[in-house]
Image (cartoon, rainbow, N blue to C red):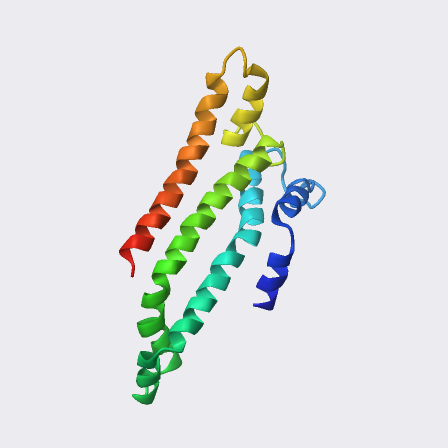
Length: 172
């Protein structure tokens, strides 16, 4: 968890911008291809996206491990693996699912931000951030060019948030 603490101490968006601006051609990786751009963005977002979910999962697991039913299972001779898989994991699945859905919403926003700034997925590959960046000069002559990608981002992020809220309500 010390690695997670260190990652949380770093400012995420400026670091994402710096990492996205790295020239992959100098690292020996292909550049300018849609697949390599997507893989680079996925790696960058994964590098920072796991931290919040991991911290929440650890805190929830420690909370469950302090419960009486876990102590009773230990006294009954349950192994640590059985405790985690049979008793702890089912009880922390709800908060982990909610945090994961919120992390997906954050990743959508981060990717569209990086693409809008020209550091994410490069044209001609489609990206909502690219579409917004291209529509920036057409905002007065063709406002719908900026409206639809913006609405798509809004609906995707709101959908992830609503899924997270629905899971939170279903899982006690």
